Length: 155
Image (cartoon, rainbow, N blue to C red):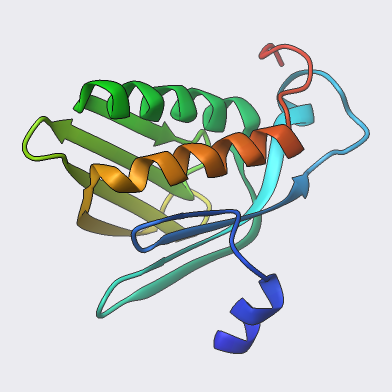
């Protein structure tokens, strides 16, 4: 799998054991609604004992990333609350929680390599430091600059 990972290049987003590569819009010629905003992505989570991949699927909408970015920015400012990436498709779910304890961030990742209906879901828990959040914010801004939301959120 290392050879495959090398062929992807550097991930567009990294946070703890989570890595995300954005490959492009699913429908580059559509400019309105849901279909215009689906992004093909590859997600990987690696812990000390496990490695789970979802490869080149339309798994995340641009506005899901945008909403998550705003929640992470607020979480970083207050060091209290939750920032959740809850994708419409069941491939990826990420929740960051802060409770003002020495800057600790609890991260929960659910990654589902098999679709439909989330028949196989892997759940990971990790603890991060608040110092990881500025880089996560920068990476999400970079992704959204390359792949902005097109049109409105109406389908």
